[in-house]
Amino acid sequence: MNKLVSSFTAAPLARGAVARVSLAPPVGRLVLRARGDLAALNAALGLTLPTTIGQRAAAAGLEVLCLGPDEWMLHLSPDQVGAVQAACAALMASHPHSLVDVSGREVTLVIDGPRAAELLTIGCARDIEAIPVGQGRRTAFDNVTVILWRDGSAAFRLDVWNSFAPHVAGLLETGCRELAAETA
Amino acid sequence: MLLIHCPYCDETLPEVEFTYAGQAHVVRAADPSSQTDAEWENFLFIRSNPKGPHYERWRHLHGCGRFFNAVRDTVSDRFLTTYKAGAPRPDLSSLQGDRT
Image 1 (cartoon, rainbow over the protein chains, first blue to last red):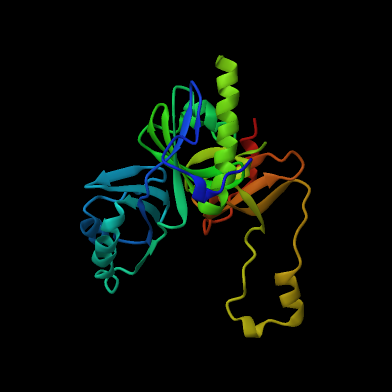
Image 2 (cartoon, each protein chain N blue to C red):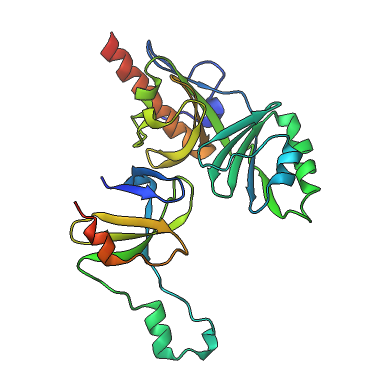
């Protein structure tokens, strides 16, 4: 049975012996689109925007994943969002770009445990093992567009749009039960 | 399942991340008002339907989101190559020579 996204709590949504799914605390999310010289934006953000798709950079509570040739997802503390938006807005005239606050659009599911990568194969057609640790990818999870961050060999974060989250969480819960039954 | 190479991500990825977007290299006239009805019809509706290599557009929808071009053999479904949007049409004879 699918859960309502409002019913997600900080406690694990699904827990098995070998994989666990839980909800990450709320985070500020910004989508940045920009082309050309990125030096001014890099200075405003305090880091170097990665230009290879899938690569990440982090500095002072700000985490950036390159999603496309001119597209980045920024994760930061919710109270930093205003400051970053103001810093980038000051560059708008000299470096036209788009910076959109999408904090309310998605939730992040944390997936960890020794068989976390195997659990993801329930919905993801990609070769999970081929994603290097410390990178991320936008991909499809059971036809839902998700952003998959790989934080460790068995630690992932999955950004899912609110309306798809109950379905994805339900699927992962089923997977956790299957893996638990296999190992029991 | 087809495996498709995205020229922007530079990875070969499962078909479910992609969507088909029609024939490639269909160019809109530089001066649209000069076009006759027959030329508009040809631009809007008339498409080739080859048996064999076909130049077509794909989009890496659940990924980088970019449109790119591909040459796919419509008989075998084999992708001969993929290349970035705006790149020139690759030479067919060199592609078919690569076939192993």
